[in-house]
Image 1 (cartoon, one colour):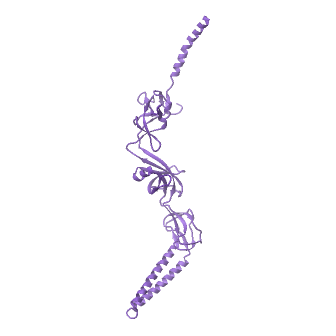
Image 2 (cartoon, helix red, strand yellow):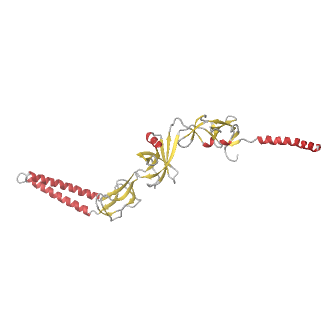
Image 3 (tube, helix red, strand yellow):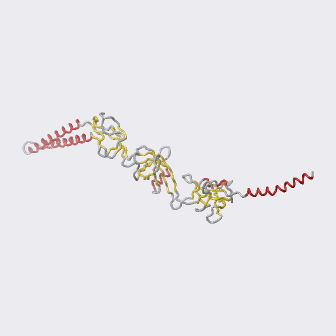
Length: 356
């Protein structure tokens, strides 16, 4: 029995040095790679995205001011029209006949007035002359009305337009005021969006809100500026509708109704920006106090060092980003991601790429 105890003690004595050596080796772990960022107090920007639709400057339903049958209707849906180009025309026969009749009556009234004025000293009374003058003036009015009716029987584009829709077919008899074609004024493309009340006040009271438009199939963005606004809110969402216009040239083949994404950027205080930190940089104590892991380098410009947990004060911005309100200064280097997996005083190194 004693011999067995002595043998076991000897084996334990030989095993202890190797076990201690392995334990010491396990404690010498390499520094953990971490992603580091330098905090910067940039401009205090609030950015929102809104979805709207492209609109023409104006959309007009053209209609004749007189009744008649359409005999010329050359426009095609989707075609471009230049200002002054023919849109539609009624049968002019009736209007030309009415104008000729009015001109004949005017000529007769003129002759009657001239004859009575020549006879005024002998047999024509002053009342007869005044009546003749009245008939002459009424005949002038009839001629003007006939000329206007003849002009109204022809529709022309008042601006460079895009034909949106033909409301009736050719050879249709229409009444006065019946829309025959819908035109878009494409001289300026606009975008309508609904914005919340907070951003609406900034957009209308200050020049610190910038708008940019982007399209699903295009990589470029296009600057917008405020044109109009509705002075009442929507019934449900408490939003205001504002109208924006493109300040520069827009891509071709953009039609009213196309989808557009508008990015609104508001600079709240350009001289005193926020220190924004990612959510992954925050660590919380058991009592829910926030903090960050500050990187402490071993020397100037060193990529190796330790991390120190530093309590901070935070607040949520309106765009859902986290800003630091106290406890840390701009220029501090902190761990940007995975800070909750580190412990205070742990050795780390800067992560610069995969495979290192």
